[in-house]
Each structure stands twice: as C-alpha cells, then as structure tokens.
Amino acid sequence: MPSSNVCPSTMPSVLPSQQRSTGPNCRPCLGHPVHGRSWRRQRIWWRVDSATQPNWRVCSVGGAVMKALDVAAWSTRHAHRYAPQRATRLRERELLLALFHLGHLLAGGVPLSNALEELVKMESRLPARLLWQSVQRQIDGGQALSAALAQHPRAFPELLVVLVRSGETTGNLAEALEAAEKLLSERQDRRSRLLTALTYPVFAFVVVIACTVFLLLSVVPVLADTLRAMAAIGGQALPWHTELLVAMSNGLGVFVASPLPIVLPALGFIAIVFGRRSAQGRRYIDRFLQRLPLIGEASRQLALATYSATWARLADAGVAHPEAMSLAGKTVTNRHLGAELEGARAAVANGASLTRAFGDRDLPSLFLRMVHGGAESGQLSVTLERAAVQLHALADHRVRRLEALTGPLLMLLVALVLIALVVSLLMPLQTLAGELPG
Image (cartoon, rainbow, N blue to C red; front, top):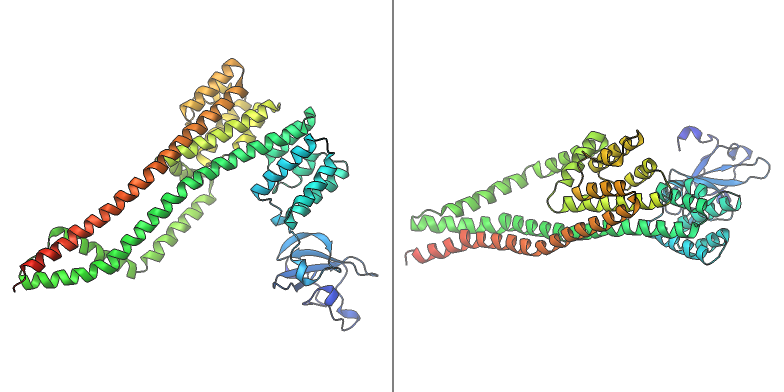
C-alpha cells in the first residue's frame, strides 16, 4: 500500500488494541489506513471506520488486500493468519476433496447451504475455510452456486463454473460436481504421472554428471602428474587417449575457474525468462519441448487426452462446440499445441466444419481421425471419450518405455565413464610402472 495513503499524524507500530495514545491528535484520520507489524514482522494495515466509536478494520497484511475484519478481539499473534485475496487460490488436492464431499452430500439429499456449512467445518486451512464461508454467504443471499464460484476466479477454474452451471440448468448439480471432480482428478493424475517419470532420470543424470566432473577435477590431475613424471623417467610418451583425457580435465578446470559457470546459466535463465514474456517466444520454447524424444510426444498425447475428455464432458452438458473447445483449450499449457487448437476453434466459430477445421493442423493422426469420425457419425462426445482413453494409453506406454530405458542408459553412461578412466589412466600407469628402470 503506498505511503501517500498513510495518515501523517500517526504511524503506530502495534495493533490498535495495544496502541498508546499520546493525545487527541494521535489518532488516525477517518478512513485513512495506518500500519504496524505482526509478531512475524509482517506489516499490517488497518483503518478507523467510525469517528465516534472506533471500529478498527484490517485492510492489508504484507501488502495483500484483505477482507474487512475486526482486529479488536484479535492479538498480533493471530492477525497474520487471515487469508489475503491473493492467497485464496485453493490447492489442487483441496479443491478435489471439496468437490468430492460436496457432490456426495448433495447426492445424499443435503441442502446446498448445509452442505457448504459441512464443507467449511471439514477444511483445516483458514484461507480455504474463509473462501467456502464466502461462497456460503453468497448462496444464502440468493445467488446460484455457479455465480458464487465465478466470483473467485483464482480459486475455481472456469471449467468448473461451466460444468456447475450446466448441472444447475439440468437439475443434476451433484452429478455435475462429480463429473468435474473426476475430470480435474484425471488431469492431475496424468500430469503427476509425467512428472514422476521425469524425476528419476533427471536426478540420476545430474548425479552422474556431478560425479564425472568431480573425477575430472580431482582425480585426473593427480594421476596425470604421476603419469607425466613416470613417462619422463622412462623416456616414453603418454597414449593419445590419456592426453585427450588430461586435456579435457585441464579445460574443465579453466572453465570452472572462470566466470563462465555463473555467466552462462544466468544468460540462459534471462533468455528463457524474456523469451516466455512474449507469445512468440513461449510458442518457440514449447515447440522445442514438444519435439523432445519420447517425453515430448508423451506430453502432447497427455495434453490432447485431457483436451478430448474435457471437450466431451462439456459437449454432453450441452455447451456449444466453440465455447467447449475454448474451455478445453485452457487445460493445455503448451503454447504451440494451444495455438493449433485455438486456430481450429476459431475456424469452427466462423462456420467451418470440424473435419475442415482440424484437417491441416499439426496434431497426432489418431486425434484427427477420431474427430473426423465423430463429426461424420454424429457421436462426437463418445468418439472424444475414446480418443482420450487411447491417447492416454499411448502416452502411458511411452512413459513406461522411458522408465524402462532410464536404468540401462544410466548404467551404460556410468560404464563408459569408468572404462575411459581405466583405459586412459590406470592401464598406462601399470605399463609405465613395469617399464621403469630397476
């Protein structure tokens, strides 16, 4: 909050209930925020709403705008626990559990307001509890659930709002919530599956590279000096592969001693950050990632599986194809793939058929054939569901192949490093030691 909004007459460093008054002019002006610090040294802003009976209201914590909350009954120790609006984004697991419980309560005949009250009691985190309390107040005020969720776009995705609205229209709100929970859960499982498959190879590769660098910087120089001394005594030259390994060690030592290990990663990081700030740069980066062997195609298939399943659910809910394609496209994080799907959506919105809109797109042939078949047969939702299942199966097969290849490839890499060390250092050492004069 800018300093121009601070009343110049006072700048207290404690909460209002603990403020020491030094005179009539030591009170903040009406409506002007003043600030203090919490026990965690967070800056807290508050204001006076009433001139006759001061009603202190928290308006900010740590620079984030908050709901107007009384702090007279709260100590500094608890003030920081209120949830600012920028932190009202629910964790993905929290949202899935909330949709699961809410759908089952509604299916059991519990009224919506009572179901939300039970949901508030089940939440363990205060930010999530306050968020669902806000939704409950809006429901009690006469709003529909979809309208209440739409007022919190950071917490509830637009896809969930559309599915809830369709459930309210058809009178099957519980089924709509269960469908939304299933769809979001499948998307999370697919993403976590891909991340899990990548974690071990990346970690193992980094460990192997770190060990190789350690050997080149610590072991090779010591043995190289010994080999050179023994070769000079015996009047012999070192083998070419030993000279090559020593040259690599010396070059790596010069590189590590220079500013380049810091400068090059910094330049790469800056290039990626500035590249992702532009739409064209993000598209080029995502296109490169999409073309990586094995993992790039698997990520594209998983993204299209989620897109197909989302489109099918929305089409079943009665959403028009352009709007369903737009909402389904928001589940795709790869910009290059998203641009292809957005181009198809724009063509459909302009009156083109689905077959024509997807005809010349850079998309997997399986997906294109399924869309064409569904459009021709009039059973697009069923075909899209099958496409999602098949694409997920293909991506899962690629991920399993990656996991199966990771172990042998890493063992081969370690074996090559050890063979290079033995052939280039230990064998010449043994040969030179045997030829030294007695």
